[in-house]
Image (cartoon, rainbow, N blue to C red; front, side, top):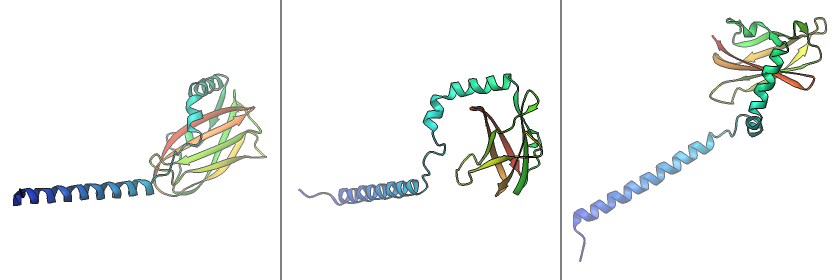
Length: 164
């Protein structure tokens, strides 16, 4: 028994729909694979495991008087597109901390394309004062994460900055 003409047409349309669905899936997978950047945060698993310990260490250091002083942490940090000279004072109970390692991570929230890490250098004339140059390539919202290490302990501070 032969199929009716309308049934043949229905099977053709179902076949076309399946081919279109498979083609759309292939295109979607191709675009998703091209833009994949992998995990943005290095060592994210270890950081997750030590998250509570890290928060406790931060609170302990702040209670002991560790702090940063800089225009970066004010309501108007005065940063602009391009190179910006930055000065940060690292202190414990008001006394300058010398010989520390300070780094600033500059990043955008939606991509890792602009992520940069900057090491701050201690000013030999002004102990406890660390300087560096931040290059901000475009306008918008930026996240600056400061990490200072002294005596094997790390104090972190993060600030969001709008560049216009």
